Length: 312
Image (cartoon, rainbow, N blue to C red; front, side, top):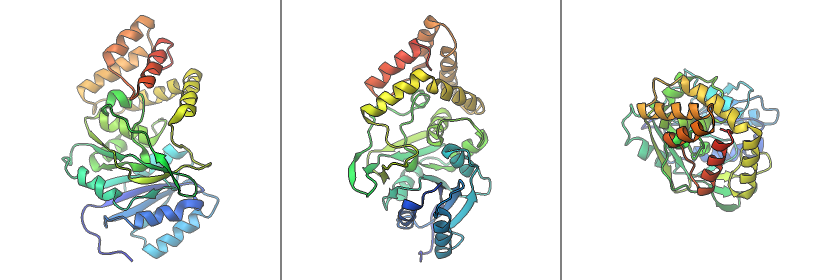
């Protein structure tokens, strides 16, 4: 079915859970990639629908060397992805997260590898891209937001600008994730990956050209977070303390990689850690010194409010 694979090897890290409705289309889009040397590593988190049967049939058609199935930890999507990326037996040059219900554009991996291969192999590197939003039937409804401010650790501490379903990263980035471990308490695997790569002196490329069709439907675990409804929900979560609980986990997880952080980013993390615990004047001082920021004007207004009211 496939031409002889050559070039750098890409491990497509696909996590599934009751994804039978759209899974075949996603797998077809993997097979249609213009890059030939790839394999799909699947972690299924205990699906009860036809997901497993679809995967087994595809493995039989493609061959075991193209698709391997693992049992997930059944602790949610973030734990499932981290358990997969940290599996020691997975060997590849580059790694790509994949959701179960999108449709990759045929040149997605080719575009990512073109940039990733320009980065020295010992430098952590993360490619991500914009997405084209589609409804449950596959009809285009718009594009994901585009952020103009730079990426970096001071931003990654507060938000994820890199959509996980577009992420492709190199072996140096993957080794950092393995070193931190699959049991870190983080809000999302993609946000964590953005934090790790930027914190440890890596490079990030956000591609303005969409890399896939991001399907929005009623069973999305995480959908697009743009629009006023999403902003109101973020405010609600902020005041209920969810962001603070997430940050508790993120700070603890980053401590595992403290020796890998750049000196500048260790200082940023130190200010961030301190501002979360001290009085109002101290919070303002350490907030200013940390340089942390969000990507939008309204987001930064919310950030200032979170600092003042001790919600970080």
